[in-house]
Image (cartoon, rainbow, N blue to C red; front, side):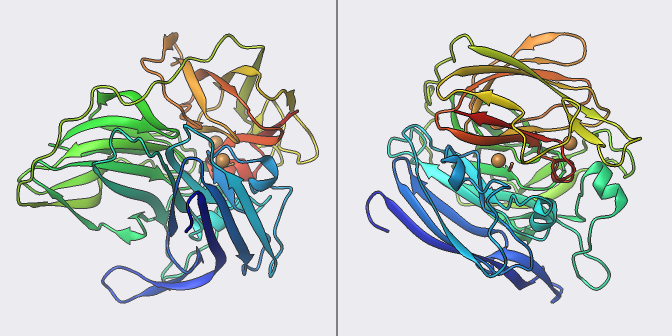
Length: 424
Ligand code: C2O
Ligand code: CU
Ligand code: CU
């Protein structure tokens, strides 16, 4: 690593990994043989160069989820890397881009499978003037895994294609129910990624003092006391937690997302255990973290409607009545122009909405009864959309090119609940 430059190599390939304590192993698809892929940590302003090699039996790409990278470097479905081939991804991280991002494949037709087989990694952009820079940073990438009776990863079932695939195990940094040490009185910064294909994670740390400090695109303006954080697939959050003298746990509480064919999660899952350690003193949390300027009035307004049509197997999950077509620009936008989108979920399931290339601000949410202004400003690239709900969001694309937007339940994205805006 040289100042201002991050150079790395990622190889996507089948790999054997050991599972938990029972001595079994399974074959996953992994970046650099590790589940999840290596944590990439860079600074604002850095130029990142990643040499990528595809040793999978399928075409793939690497998509830099949430990062403002040039469209031709963003692993779009139209830029596949064939089996056996390599390419270099290169981009420079702009000022004020510190946050918790991730990388995963985005090839047309294979995204869901490649992610549930293990291809995903965390990408943290740091700031040199971080108001929480003195806290221990604990990245927790949550993914899920399903194994058959031979400890192999089975393909999707029809129910998975309908509801989105949930695994049997939720893994934390690739491990089942790890133990994390948190000293009594120690304040740590947890960064949490929902890298599952379809599971909504309603996270809590019962008994601990928890403050939300960040969203997908980095810090929010001020800490907020939040005891629970709901992360839809693809979404991230930052939480400051203070350790106690007693042991505890990070749990996922029951959440119903309107599944059609598979059972809802009605039990509380323990994701990680927290073990106490001797008391330490921590500095108080700063009252202000960052300034997020509101986006000005939009130059364009658009509406995006998400629908399910169970009668049409070729167009079950649609966006404005259509399924994704790589050759079609659903919208044409302009670099630097403020867009305001109203995204409406007219379906029976939750559909988390994601946009490439930039971060957005949610202005208001409609819960089926009425609009409510968002209580605080945050930069996001995924927003949860429960059935019958709508959101209003604003964003600016700073770079030209084709940008996808889609449901981040990867089975729905794969079946075409995706569109693209050609930014010129
Ligand atoms: Cu995380 Cu288009 O995806
Ligand atoms: Cu993305
Ligand atoms: Cu969906």
